Image (cartoon, rainbow, N blue to C red; front, side, top):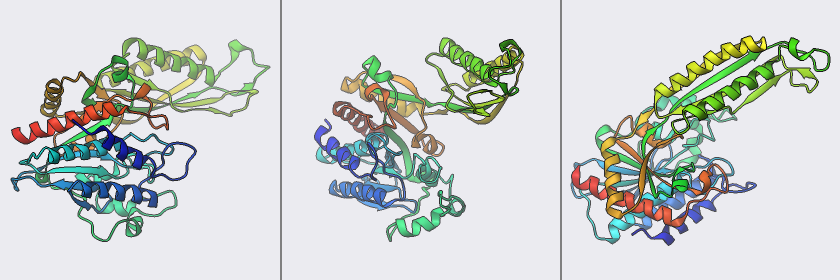
Length: 410
């Protein structure tokens, strides 16, 4: 069984490596504080007897050599960076639990045929450069030499310039060849309330959801708040609120557990308390494990926009800004995770991930899977994020069991 105290100690140590902030942990990629965090994690991997290296973008690895040198490596871990004023578990739990799984393998005297690598990825959150999943994109070749000069921070400093002072002297290439890796397994806290609510130990991720972003522009006509009678108004705010209510009610009624619709930003013009709004612009974030649900919701929004425009005497434009297909996790790996749960006597359920993760990028090159552990009230990106130590230990047990199964069957 996993050592709960050892997992807790590593997470608490990383929690304390932070920039000054009002609450929680702030450890943003390519900063001196992040360097401290990466170096701490490297030191813990060395203490576990792993061969440690860092690549040209700041991803860190700990390698346990397998007995058959020609076989590709099993890879597991997650990111070490945080958003500002974050909790201590998002990403970090996956890296720490992967390291604990290695310790279990070594302490039990087990020899693997395949090499096993722990990875702590760089800048998954995208806080420094506005580029999410940065480390995994360099691993897979989505990003390369061109992006080192094209990607800049808020001060205009390129990624290449920052790397000159951030990286240690000896680094390995970021890009991994196809035959280097057998598969990637990522443990993560759920970042939602389902597992805790249903009292389930492990979530087995089937899909990382499809995402579509829309911008809705409602155009009316500005007027005095006290002199234009209600029936004669072209009120952009009223039209927008009516449409927003349709979106929320329809999604809740017809897609309660299969899709989400979020109005994350809403702006009114001219933005004066005594003026009828002439324009309202709001965003819609649609997510689902099935692209067909996204398409149906988009069609519904467009239909209701036409109806509301007539009802409120306004114009409404619905623009699709981006559209990303769902990413399916490897079915064979998911079955292995399920079998591991059954062998250990842990409860489990299949589910989708509503957030993006490194696994979604790595899955384009290698078989990938994710397992979730419950977090309290689903709180994340928040100092109050918390995962019970027992939940982390159970997740590590499942990861360990899955690594052994994969090693023996692949």
